[in-house]
Length: 171
Image (cartoon, rainbow, N blue to C red; front, top):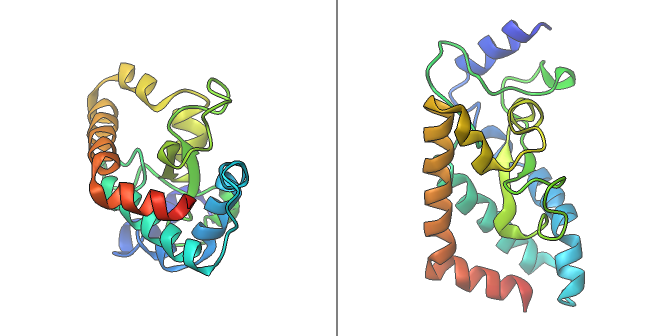
């Protein structure tokens, strides 16, 4: 399948941005990113923590307006898409991106507040080892989208709901 066909399939699927959230795969991949923080706090990953992580994923996705991190809607075809091996899919197969880049911030990369749901294209080709804030220099829709999501994430992280979940996750 060619890229344009993949993008057309995404555009036709009304659940293209939410389909992957129905699967347990994102919990498993998030655990891989957070494993060190769990180990440091002496926490084991059990079924209760997996349920909490599912809630965390939903909250993070809500802060992104239920779309990929750098989703922009100014084109007839989606500007976020999968890696070539997944172009046969008519939904975004999310990967975890780091708002503070792994390459620039090795000490704080795997905190739960640093994780975001990215399309593979945006993770690898838009952010590409930069901090999310740095992308605002490009201006326009990308800058507005990045700023909007960062503001919503800050509000989420200051909410009582988030603080309670994070406490339960690491106790």
